[in-house]
Image 1 (cartoon, rainbow, N blue to C red):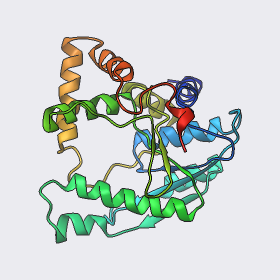
Image 2 (image 1 turned 90 degrees about the vertical axis):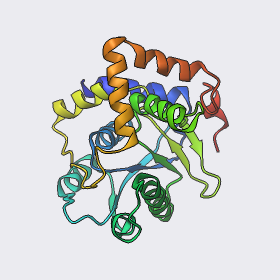
Image 3 (image 1 turned 45 degrees about the horizontal axis):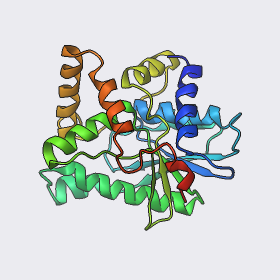
Image 4 (image 1 turned 180 degrees about the vertical axis):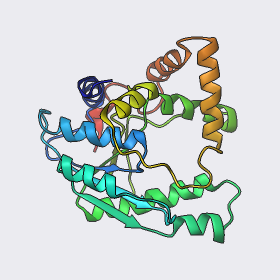
Length: 245
């Protein structure tokens, strides 16, 4: 997928849900993975011509694993003219060594988001962009259905009352396969996750389940996404963006 095609999908999401307003300072959470680097690249380019002028910063929450090299990402941010901050934490040590969590992802995500939100507020940002794509939306709905017994997924725009930040998800219309295609075409410096739980989570189980469903029933992921978009779930009305803080 070419950058112009990515920008088309990102702009469509931003327009449909009013994700970007004049004067916004948007922080992109950078994990080092393919999704966050795609989002960073797209927003950096969108910033040049989007009708609502906005500024952009990038933040990585370093969980404290020793084998995380972010120099290539630092160089990418420099080329894109995006300020970049790395937040050092000991979250990995707390979750895996001190707490020895049997389900580490929930606690890790909570602590990581807390560190990210504190940092972006210090930087003067009013919005945080998460790199969730279409497959993430559907996988989250399936996880909620299978493991919690409810139909739920995250919304395109979420206002966080406790912090005053607004979370936006500009990649929500992109398929994971298109993200992979763009990353390969653009040679983005993807950094492999050093987390010991990577690839061994409930999300990975559901991801593989969705792949199997889509192989056996081509187009099922797209139909599930359409059902979510049209299913009156909280935050999924096209007019939602007009009501954001």
